[in-house]
Length: 305
Image 1 (spheres, rainbow, N blue to C red):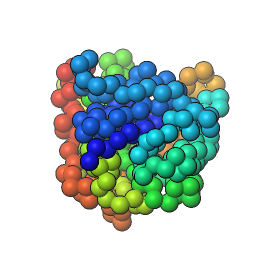
Image 2: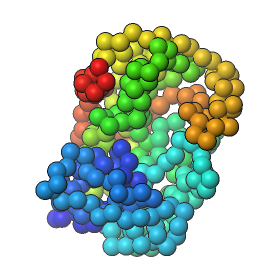
Image 3: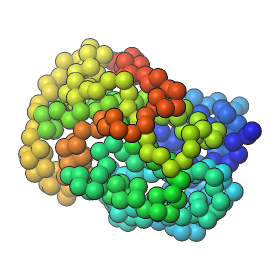
Image 4: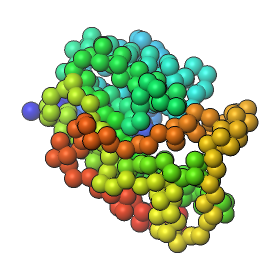
């Protein structure tokens, strides 16, 4: 049976583009909603292939969110922020925006809702970003009890934010700072594995109402990931440890800039490991054997080596 119409909030982002590809390959009609939806093109799509419907919808706008979900059988909320700007605060996006999407999906009669959170989200987490995402999970459940909640670790891929950012940094600087000594643990997960799992949900796979933790096959420290990247690039750089306290002091000064390179809350995000707990279902419950970061390192070498 055809999937029908799927609305993706955050469809223009890294995960959204890959998810659009996976869903459209299964015959879904994808509606990519966001503040700047023009960038929402499927990953690896050619001009001859179908394109998603582009809808301008700010999560802070009730009417726009309601219009974006109209007629959708599945609603997916990928939206999250790493820093605040103006009205785009952690509370307005992670809590109120999440509540607005869930309530609109329920009112529109959507069969399914998928809400993206993050590993490390809990109400007593050091970072406000993680704390507000934890509250966001609660308000989504209250508005749409059958929602599927996804907590991924670091998501990687050809056009990701982590490996591309640090690969670019190695071309500009001989020193790479390691906040917290580089000890934060990650369980990197391939973006296409994440997209495949959501496509299974779209095809009426596992029942809703569950929380999933998505991680890859191995756990690495922040330092180990950067060492692997440098090895792939055949580049020698100094990995310089910085304590959390020092990093927070630096971030406090940088926050006075219009576009700070990092903030105090981003420093606090690194105080929590991003690994699966072992107490929640994972990609294995979708029949997916996750791929490791080894698949993306040759791509980084080709792009930045």
